[in-house]
Each structure stands twice: as structure tokens, then as C-alpha cells.
Length: 577
Picture (cartoon, helix red, strand yellow):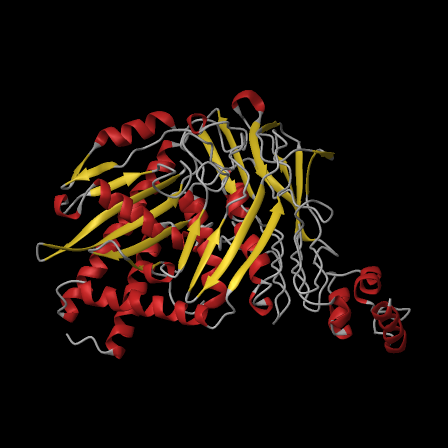
């Protein structure tokens, strides 16, 4: 087959469709909401050189910089010429793969006509890997659970049953974790079948020429965007909120250099490893640092290995964004999810129109519930809720939409089915959006109650992780280009303030409530269309008082129309102050 421009585009789209079909196979055969609803996974396909050619569009987008490194690490351990049809390689090593033990990576070589033509890889966030439950309290990796070194799960089609036995013996809900692991095998099989079918239909013998063209096009596209930018170095530094349990604060320092057609991000000056379970391995840092650059400069090109070649990430070994074994890493998103906002703090100085206001749910909120029913065994549920999206140069932020992890909200009905709780409240929070010409999206308040149930010990163990960011704190949910910070945040148990990110016991009748902030605004709030402010007041997103205080918009006595003269006078007074 002749690979002209049209054919390359058609086959490129076909590769994306193949990994998306693999993702659907994973979703339909998985056991847990972590996969089926939350979509915390990634499926990818590679050529024989282990260059990533496509990854699933229903996925955690931050896997962009992780997936290629995982596959390269697999091939270093098991060189391509030693692999056979039916082999499956597995690991959850945080430094080899995606940064914490509860992510399991499973890869398979793909053969066609007796020749190795590529690889497929599936990474899934599992509910449990033993050790302490999901908490920021772990001091090292050994407290966090079972580590699986790079090894073969299947050898020429023969299952290494010992791997399943070790996993089963170390975790609380083995039927669900092993069920999701088997679903990863399904995903890899679907991807293999789809790729082989494509090769047979097109007459291609391998992916060499096609893969090289796809990655080269992607690399050229991003380099061309970078080459148009001003050259120089811009810096951004933030002090993260105090960590639960230890009270430590991590300082993130990023220097973003634009040189010719490449971007270099250097984290020299960042704090060292900490005792709380938030440390990041370099793979995780690389991914959530490259992703915002790709998103700001070249978002339309599908993700593949070529997208990473123009971006270099540096971080001193032993710092919080390049930790060493055995640092604890379970909650590594407490830092990594914030890296896009740190980097946008530098990029805003160059491209203010390309960055978003802060996200009110960043880093991601996650809620875990665990217990044992006297009849029915152990349960382990996960739920996730999002804060408001940041405003941008084009539009207001969306309500309760996550960034940068790109996962979905788990429906409350699913969580209520998985654990003995009932939601009492889930609603937008008035005045939580950060004011701006384009305001942030509203945050939300969530409350649930533990139901009376036949529980061993009479309690449910619960961990709710928030972001700890407040309007007056060291790292608020910031606005851009004159926009203001998003508002809201906090955790209460039975009406009393409580620390997030740690495990606590809840008994029937106990209520746990938390608030996720609104997104940061974009642009001067006094430039916002008064009619848009009025619409926000009518919808309960902004109060009449905040309309006046934040936007300089005065409503009539009934609150149903804008007092144009009073608004003009108030805004003129504010602008002249």
C-alpha cells in the first residue's frame, strides 16, 4: 500500500478507533466504577520500536507522558526479540510505570504473520493493592501495598498463576481487582485483533513507515507552534497548602524556557521529598508537565510519541517531583495535578490567551469507603466529584468539570449501590465561581450519611481527599489576566471541621460534608456583560450582593433587571479608584 497523505490520515484515525474499541472492551468487562464510570485508565498501541502511535480518547489525558515511558521500560526488561505470541508483561512499580502502586500496567506484543509488529498497553487505577487503605498518611511505599516488579503474567500463553495468587492474598476485594485485571487483558486482546485486522485489510507488513510518519507529523506540528513563540525563560513558583497529618508545605518552582522549536521545563528549586504520600515519580511529573504545553499549543493533534519530542522535563533527583524509592506516592496527584497550573503561571507571561483559570477540583477529589458486611464480604467503593472549571479568554468555566485529569464523575446511585451510604446533598455553591470577564464555573457541596447496616465492627472506614486550597491560602484557585480566585473548600464530619486525606471511622447516622471550590475567573470582572451577571443571579450562581461587590453590577429593587445608570456609575468609581 502506498502511504500518501490521505491514506496516512485514514489509517491514523483507524489506530485511534482501534484503541477506543479496546477501551470500550475494558469498560464493558471491568468490575469497578473506577473503570466503568470514573474512566481512570488508558489504552494505547505502539509500533515495533515501542513508539506510541495512539491512545484512547476516553482516558485520563495526563497519561500522555507516562505511557511511552512504561512501554520503553517493558522492552528494556524484555527485549522485543525475546518475546513470543501470548506473552503478557505486568508491573505496578511506581518508578517504572505510572507513579503509584494501585495503577497496574499490562502490555502485550502483537504479532502478524510470525513477525512482531507492535505492542498494546493498558493501565488501570485499581481500587486496592493492599497495605494501608487509600490515605495520605503512609510514610513510605512499603505501607502502601504490594509491589509487582516487571515480570511476565503470561509466558507464551501460559498463565503465571503465582502472580494472581500473590495479588489475591494481599488485597481486600480480590474478586474486583482481579476482575479489572482480566478486563485489561480483554482490552489488549481487542487492540491486538483490531490492529491485525487493519494490517490484513491494507496489506501492510508492519507499522514502521506509518508509525514514523504519524509521530513525525505530530512532532513537526508542535515544533512549528513553539517556533512562533517569543524566546526566553519565564518562571512560576507556588507554595502548596499544608499537607494533612505532617503539616509540610511543598514549594514548586518551574522555569519554562522556549528555545528555537522546543520547550524545556526545569523544576530545580522545588522542595525535597516529604513524609506524606504525595511524592511524584519522574514519569508522573513528565506527563502532567508536557500535557498542558500540548493542550495550550497544539490541542487538535491526537496524542502520540511525537507530541513529547519537543518537550524536555528536568527535575533534581530526590525532590518532590522526582522522588526516590521508597518514597510514598499514593496521593501523587496532590502535586502532579497542580503542575499545569504552575506551568500556566509561567506561560501566561507569554501567551495569556492560551491558559485557563484554576480548577476548583484540582487536585482531584476522591472519596473511598471500605467495610465488611457480615453477609456479603468486604466492600470498597470509590467516588469522585469535581469543582468548577476555570474561565478562559473565550468563555465562562463549566460547572463541576475536572481538569487536568479528564476523568468522569461517578453517579451517586453507583456509589450508593457499592457502599451503605445515601447522599443527602449535592448542589452548586452560590458565589463560588471566581469573578472575571469570564467567570469560573461553580463549585459544589456534597453530603452523605452512613446507613444502618449489618457491618462487622459497626462502622465504615472513609477517606475523602480534597485539594486544601482556599481563597486566602498560599495557593488559591487562581484567576488569569485580572480574574479572581475561585471560592469554597472544606470538610466537616457531623458539622465539625475535619482534616482531609486520612482514614476515619464513620458509624450509622454519621454525616460527612465537603465543598469543592469554583473555578478561577479570566479577565477583569468589571468588564463582564451586566446582563450575564444578571443571568448568573437568576440562576443562583452569583448573589445580588456579589454582583455589586465583585462585578460592579447594581440590580433594581426587585432584583429582576440591571440598573444601568447605577451600574455605570459604580464601575466608573471602581475603575478610577
